[in-house]
Image (cartoon, rainbow over all chains, first blue to last red; front, side, top):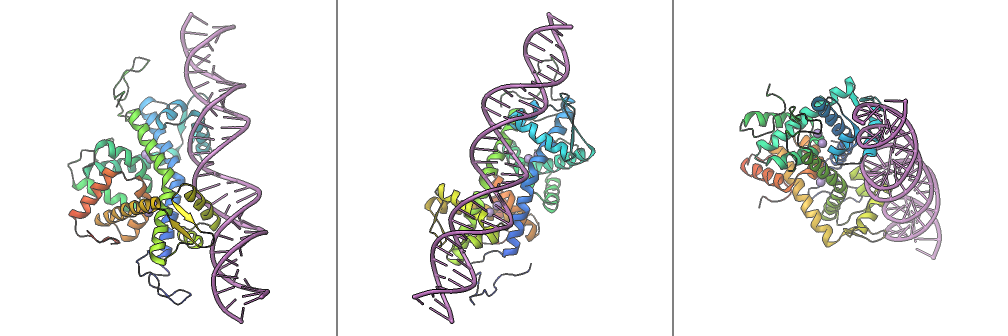
Length: 168
Length: 168
DNA sequence: CCTTATTTATAGCAATGGCTATAATCGCCA
DNA sequence: TGGCGATTATAGCCATTGCTATAAATAAGG
Ligand SMILES: [Mn+2]
Ligand SMILES: [Mn+2]
Ligand SMILES: [Mn+2]
Ligand SMILES: [Mn+2]
């Protein structure tokens, strides 16, 4: 909030009659979006690993690759990065395990993902579309928006949503 | 919808007691999200160019770079790609112009962006957060979800949203 | 124990999206 | 009509995220 709309530029003309958004505000939106983009893959990996461990007792590269729809070396490379970032631990030929930090990130992402998907369902969107769109949308939902989604799901107890967690 | 939940795997054990989503469905979600990621930058550029042309009569690299918060050579490279893709026309040292295809994409993106932002505002989210989150969310909103958002905004005429287009 | 199928690791390539530093070009004003 | 400031182009670097092809390691059955 520094420059504001309707200022006088260096040529002495009034700007923004056409209602262009404030430049500083816009740059902040784009920056936030670029930031989210940088972390979304990591979030999906960690969430998926947690799901696989909960379900199968282990998370193997081949299974991760199959679920993501990418090749195994792609997964191998990313797992190295996750390990370097302290989110997972790799035991060679024995699967992948989450560190405490990884578990915490997974918990957070899974919860957020679930709220977003439930929210879309509560809006009346089909289960399939809700599933597909939530996979992308989740990474761009701020804390404030997440709370609004949660409140909406709570109010509209129609709730055709996929319930992974109990309603607590 | 091919394999389904609760199948018997090669070891003869019942899978998916933990309610893991169907693998084919999940891979489709991830694929759609990766696809959206590949096009979102292009969408933001084209939308921004349209806004600048409407507002200033021209779209220059320096202005695009400033609004996106990136360096000018980054913009120069992307504009080459947009030109190669037939979305814009570059007149050297005279700014960027949209082709018919570019105009159509810009119209679509701008409309979708506006619906998403208005929707978030209608949910009671602050204008600033709505602006920031919409910038990322818009690219992952399918046609079905967009219609649901539009319907919700229509119903809740509270509408504290930023109105670029007339309500038609 | 040894072989073999499965799994993982590695090498090398390409596209995308950033950056800095610097050169080239243009428009405009003195 | 120069010349100068602003704009654009280009070169070269890096990180990320994907791929294929191939090598190496492991677990497990015979
Ligand atoms: Mn997720
Ligand atoms: Mn996701
Ligand atoms: Mn946009
Ligand atoms: Mn955007």
